[in-house]
Image (cartoon, rainbow, N blue to C red; front, side):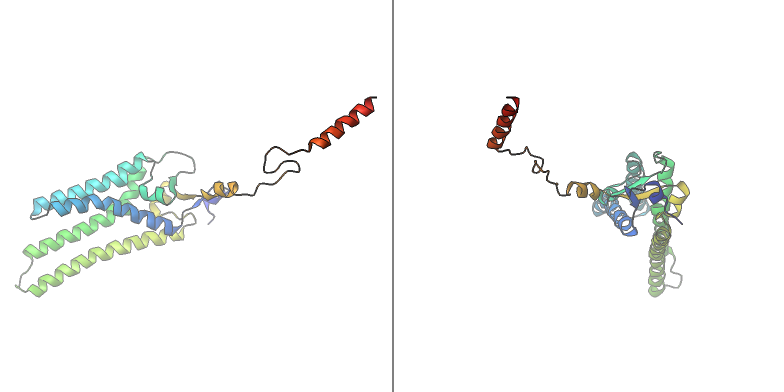
Length: 230
């Protein structure tokens, strides 16, 4: 399949973002979005279902604010994308809609987040109520299995997203392909390369500065003109 980005921008003004840039941009975004939740969890500890619900709701609200509201306000872009020179675009030039931002972040962030949340809730339920034979070994084993299932799903989900991005000519995930959204990398260094070209010296000008003339030569030219007139 031919790259739509390369076909649209034949001058290499933009090109499909590499999977490496996409990965590290997303990693920066995840770290930034988690910082407020970590700070909140440090000062406010969950000791029952109500306090746990407050922490989960706060975490969800912060992620929604960062990945959806802020991204929509920035035309689909985030701090991580800006740091790595990435942009989300439509080839038609249309603005990324709120529905598109919401859909792509549900796919990329909130589906694995919700699944891991469910496994954590199940782990707490097991810890509190499901220990039928009184064996601590059974309780510990079930909790470890549930936690590992959540982590495994998180890893497999992002592995699947990475594979689908790598397999596309324009490095689109499935949801971006559905919305016809492209994550592109700008060739900002092209301008610098143009400016770094060596300046060609003119016959009479050196580095675009006024030429230096011999005054005696000018006098000879003027004397020759006067002689011709006579």
